Figure 1: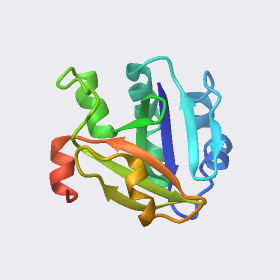
Figure 2: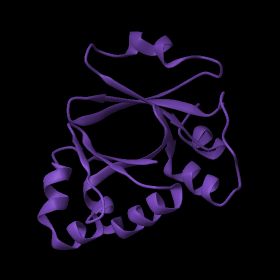
Figure 3: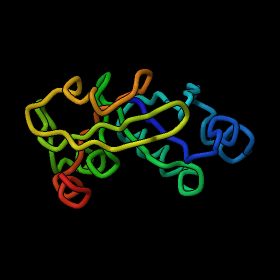
Figure 4: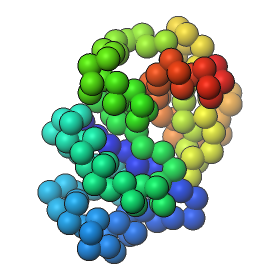
Length: 149
C-alpha cells in the first residue's frame, strides 16, 4: 500500500517534511520517495497508511493538496473511499464505476477529469499535454455526485 501526497502549489513537500523534527519522527520507519509533485510513502497496510496520514494531519492541512492511497499499482483510492474500505463499508472491484483522472503537470495538480463508466484512462489523452502524469482515482459515489460526474 502506498500513500501519495500531492503537494500544494509552490510547496516542496519532501523538503518541508524532512525539515521538521515532528514529521521526521512520524516518517522515521518509512523512506518517502520524492516525486516532482509530492511524495510517495510505502506502508504495510491500509490501516498503517491511514494512521500515518493521521499523524501527518497538521502538515497535510497546510502543505498538501490531495491525499491518495494506492492499493494496487496504478489504481488510487480517494481518502473517503480508503476510509470506507478500511471500515469495510465497501469492497472495490474492477471495473469501479466512480473514477476520475488526476492530471499532474510538472510539480502540480492541474485538472480533475471525471471518467465515464466503462472507459479507460487512455480515452482521455486528448484532454492532456505530452508529459502529463495521469492518475486513475477511484472515489465514493458521494464524491462523484458532488464534484460533478
